Length: 266
Image (cartoon, rainbow, N blue to C red; front, side):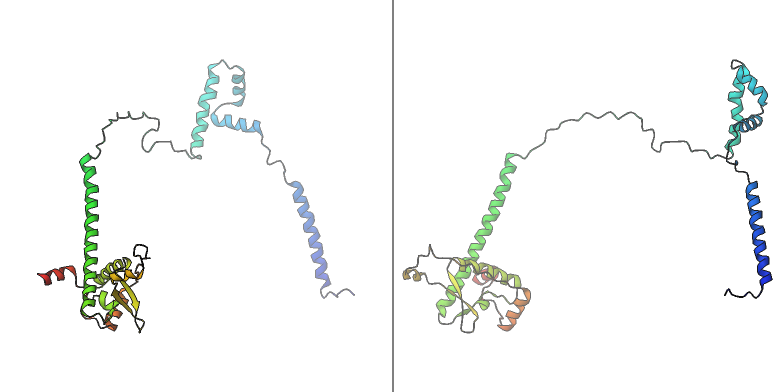
């Protein structure tokens, strides 16, 4: 069953008002003009001529007679009136100008290029640099060879005085007062080991010891020309150097520097 209405009279009145409002909207829609978007060219021309101060009827007669002087007045001067009116509502475009002068200018005349002869190194300069470099290399190599011979002599002298006591490798190369000097000693000792004048072994405590090689060992049937040479390579950091000096209680260097050796001999 449909729901009962508590106020049936008010519902009927609302329905009647809705019908009347729909009919009224329909009539108003019919009365609207639908040709508002159309353009009336003749009316626009008459209004424009009136604004220019020209009678539309007189203008029509002047247009027919194009040779008359009044026609030129209508064509040219009359447009100035409408142009001045349009200036108040239309923004003007700024004129174009160059910031750094006109682009279409004359190219600068290129300066004549003078070919200067390049000065090359003279023959004396060419000879000087290679000679200097070769002299530096020779002097550095001679200094290294002398230092290697001096360290080898120290090692052989130590074993001649006390051949039964092994020489600890760290006691021999470590300078407790200078880490760079210790690295230089290890570098020079590596040449002695490479050339077969000394060797490194491990003692009963698994610690490295160094001893010179007796030249008379070649009587054992080993040809030193064909013998395999070993290069001693050791990685040593500054912290390792400090630990070695502390652990082995090294107080004085076995290998004295070249300057201190010269002072002692003097």
